[in-house]
Image (cartoon, rainbow, N blue to C red; front, side, top):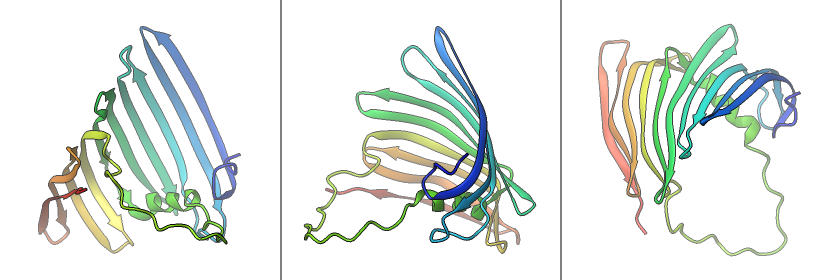
Length: 201
């Protein structure tokens, strides 16, 4: 059962796991999550059925090469999302070279997955707590690299639709940058976006 996951009160989970070690470690996992029901305080919407086939090859130096195609089935439609790339650790932290691809991505199908893992509101505390201080470094401080985007069609709220989303998100030296992010609209127009977020101490 999948009810053990935070925020879920019911659901089915099944899968296979295979691992081999011969010079490098190879891990393959097939996973299916279905009939998921979240706690009503989080969402009353129907959650998608999720299937995934994940493969990861771990080299002797710790570098991970992964491929994870995901399929989300909901309300008679299917959204697909394929994650692939490499992860490597070094003195500066985690180096990422990844790609996110899709032929059809309905935002609600993926977005709804965040609800079961959001958790409830923390219990009120009777003791006074000091206000949190400013972060000394960004959340991505120990991550560098890029995530390339290749999304053929993205639909939001069944009304807003863009096509051929491309470009890359780059992380470097404390900055999060959008590099040549672009998309087209159904009327033939398109937008291009370059920019970023720089953390300042």
